[in-house]
Length: 102
Image (cartoon, rainbow, N blue to C red):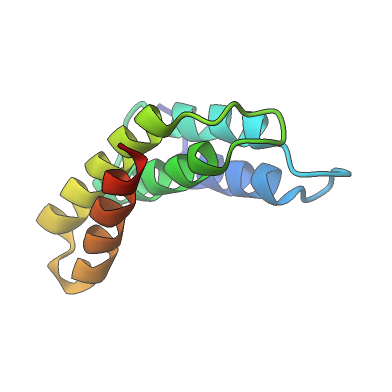
């Protein structure tokens, strides 16, 4: 399980290319996947959406995967709808992105 916020921070840094010559989406995706293995729903939501964003773009060592991105956007949207009614627009955005990936 580990420390999800720390894993998300490492993943985001890899995706941006912090401390590296270029972004490393493949490394970022691995960290996001590890963070999805358990923990708090909000961290799950944030990691699902961030990983889906990377899979939508592809590149930097990561193969584009629209089906997996759609699945993650849907999971993130469902979590947002259930747990974050005050952040409804985020859930709607994720559903919209998921439908575009199909």
